[in-house]
Length: 239
Image (cartoon, rainbow, N blue to C red):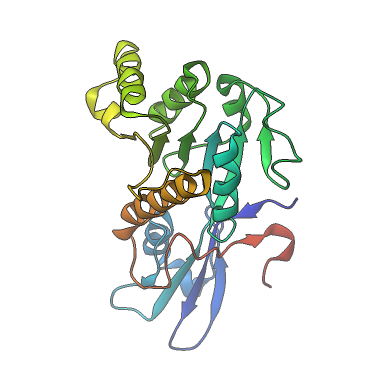
């Protein structure tokens, strides 16, 4: 598969001239004098017109990486819900009988323990984690990776008692109350449902809400949002 890139379209609204901006690449003289402001718009993933100019920047972002730990029944519904959103799903589960291509077609599956699996996924503060196994040997290392890398969303399935025990283990491992409190546990918004699709819906709803919270301060226009899905493949870039 061709990899997706992040870029921006820079347009002079006065004369209609436009070109593609990519980090580290030079611009024409028309836009080079505004490069610092264009860089700032791009870094903040926002659209808008540079102040006191007619230069408009529209950013095109990668899908948001969401790592699901635990190829359980709920995960199948999460994948279905995520298909219509700008999420790039990866599933980690060392238990091969759960995480199979038959159960999760067209999804990146890593049949390894989290410590090894995360070596195959590039993650950062714009990544999200959903832990579903209830097994501390699988969930805890994934949660620690997410906390260490400051994922913007971290959620873990389980009862209040399960989450209390989880928090105690993380506390013992040296994590602060602030870090531990950033974990959504029990995961999901309160819908009242208990079936797998209802739980999945509550999780995806919370993930969407937290995604918008993170991006809200960057947005200038209604069409500039994390679920626009405006991505482009390297081999199909506009000329």
